[in-house]
Structures are given as structure tokens and as C-alpha cells.
Length: 546
View 1 (cartoon, one colour):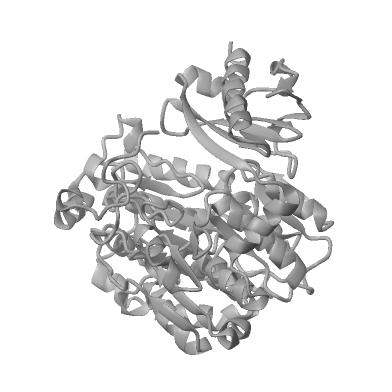
View 2 (view 1 turned 60 degrees about the horizontal axis):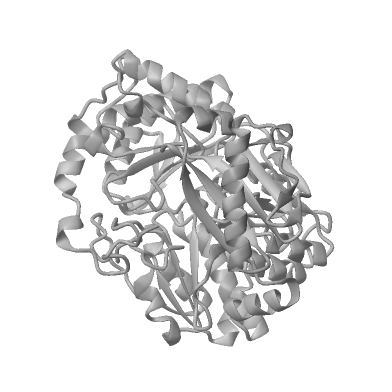
């Protein structure tokens, strides 16, 4: 993949969005429902798009919010709804639209006071805290965010009463009803003016910040971090955690410097990502270039994306850590430093995460639960404690409280940040140094992801592959040990293929949006072996798709 000449450099003025135009298009543009791209597409991450091409507009949010109100009514969800937004330019307008519909439908709605921003994990925790001990009148939530997507994008997602991402049954229900409402011109959407909605008896301006901050001591050893006096740096990347780090610093007496406190919906302070776009991806060394440049000034530093469900860990020893590397370190540390976690609780990983995790978990005598891509697969296990940790290779994870009970059922960037500080405080070594120790014990994996062309028909076939359709018996010179089209941890379809050998594996999955399929591959030998796996992966897939 060719690197853009601007990658890692400050964003030039001609890349910046026109916020006024974007917000005007949000309110005025009507989606063309004859274009499938402009209909509601409500997946695990909710509905995403941009007003600039009619894929994220007021009309969409009216329909989706009404659909959520009807879903709640149909399924007996009649507790409060906690709603948060991130710092993207259309997140604020979308929250206003949603509140107009929620209030008109009589839904008790809690939003952050002072028009503040709220991270995804804070909403997940708020839902779970409210529902604890309750069997009825349960709460749920909405988070308005397109995650790390570019500044022109918007996103809108729903978290049901278990606090995590909605599963496919729910998202399909909401999507179908929202599109039906749109096709009928939104005439069945209940709505009231924003000022009326804001003053409605069902609308509550609350503080989400301090309850979350004060509860952090129940999931992270904050006293260990404080007493070690670690010098910590954090870059919120202009996102929703920007008003959280001050209270965290003050509540726990930590030596934290927020290196950038700016909130700018243009994200003009960003360095450009690998492809020349502004993207607040805290796992990208190009988007995180400013914090990486400060790595030697802090014992540990970290960043989050705009809704703070992802983490990026920067250490003097390693720079920005590869997400797979940090997952392995975090799991290895937690399994040895959380004595009150259930002994039979499994570690959850997605099937495209590093096999170094498998080796760490096996060495510690714990169970591994390998699931398809998507954090929604971890939510039930984190909720009932059958999983102690769930992590994705895309830098998203959460884990149990120190007493072994549920913390969040959605990804939590801040606890992964603070865990890096706890690891350093308790062991005297930063996570980058711990990773080097793990590779000396378990091998040093090389990991890559590439895109390969595929027609829509081939993508559909790839989704429906069966193991019998794979005729190969070896992978890069080693016998194939497993051919998987269902995840070992929960028997759910992986929407593709994974092939495993002793010292390497690959997985192939079709892209949801482009005419490509993604190949993930890992080798515990060397670069030559990794490239052999990638080449054979393409041949194996091509033969299976004939």
C-alpha cells in the first residue's frame, strides 16, 4: 500500500472541512432512496455516512431514532436512555435531532450537561450501573459517533440494556423500520422543537464524568500509578475524553499532562493518516505522529479516538505499540494480577488477532474464546463474567473490574491507557519492554494485512465457504492444522475463511464496502515465511472460489 506524501505531516488547510456547509447539508439534504448507499445501513457500529453525499442527514437520524423508540416499546424497554456524542461536526446536530424525537416519544433521556462530550465506554458503564440489580424498567443508550472516521463523517449507534453493541437481530430490526419510515417521508416520526424537547420533563441534563472517573479505581490500581509518580502524557486527538483527563488527574493525584486540549470539529491539529486523509486513528503512527514525537518525555503516553473506544499506547522503548502486541502484554499482566477474577473465565480474542495471545493464554492455563470480528461477540461474556477480557486487533478492548464483575460491555480506551500505566508502575517496565520479554519466551510474530481484488459475486462466495471447499493440505511448507469458516469460541460464522498451521495462519474476509477482500496473516518464523503465507492464501482463496 503506497504511502501518501503527506502521511504523518500536519494537515494542510485545503484538507479541512467547511463545518457550516457540512451542518447545512445535514439539515437540508434529502437522501435519494433509489441509491442503496443513501438508505439506512445499521450495523454493529450503527449508521455511518456524511451529509456531503446524502448518507448521514437529519432525515436518517429522525427515522433511526423513531425506529429505536418503537423497538424499545415493542421489547418492553422502558427505563431511561443514556445518550452521548463525540466531537465530530455533525454529532451535535444529530444529538439535537435525536432528542426532538426521544422527547416526543416520551423517552426518559439523560445527556451530559453543558453540552458536553461523552465517550462510548462511559455510556456502556452508565447503562450497566443503572441496570445493576434490576429485572425490569431497564436502561439502554445511544452514542453519536463515527469513531475514528474523518471529520466530515457522522455515526449513530444503539446499545441495548446489556450495555454493549447491538447484535444483528436488533440492528436489522432498526434498519428495516428506519428505511420504511424514510420511504414514507418520515410522516410517522414523532418530533417536537428542540427548545421544547430540552425543557421536557423527560429530558435530564446530567453529569456522566465524575461517576465514571470515581469508578475507575474499581477496575485499575490507581493508587499504584499515583504512588509510582509516573510522568504520563495523553493526547485525546480532539475527542470526547478531553474533559475527562483533568478530573482523573485531580481525583487520583496523577502526574498527567494533556498534550493537546483543543476541540476543533475540523481536527485541524491532526497529522495526516497513511492515505492522505485526516483520520483520528490512535493505532496509526501517522495520525499519532505528534505524540510519538514526545515519547521520550513520558514514562508512558497514550491516545484515544474521538469516542474513546480505542487506545494507542506510546512507550520510550517501542514508540506506538502495535495493537496486537499490547493486547498480548495486557492479557499476560491481567491474568497474573487480578486474583479475584473467576478462575474459569475465558480470554476473548477475534480470529484475526495475533496467535501470540493463544500462546500466552495457554501458558497461563486459561481458556481462550476465539470469535468473529466485532466487539458485539464479547458483550454477553463480559456481561455475565464468562469472559474476563475481550480484545480486537483494531485496538479495542475491555475487561472485568478488579472484583471480577462487569465493567463495560463495549470497548474502553481509557482503561487500556491506564492499564499501561499500572503495568509500568507495578513492574518497573513499560508495555514495550514486556512485549520483548514475551517474544523471547513465545516467539516473535510478524503480522500483515493486505487487500486483494474480488468481484461482488466472489465476495458473496467467500462469505459462504465451507472447509471442504479448501483442497490445500499445506500452508507455506507446513501441514494445515485447521480450516475454519466458523469461530471456535462460539461457532458463529466468520464470514470468510481462516487456515491455521503450526507457525502461521491467514484469514480472508470480504470487505463490506469495497470490491476487495482482506487477508490477515501471521508468521512466527520470518518475513519470507509471512510472504509465502500471503501468496498461498491468495491461491487457496482463488481455487476455492472457482
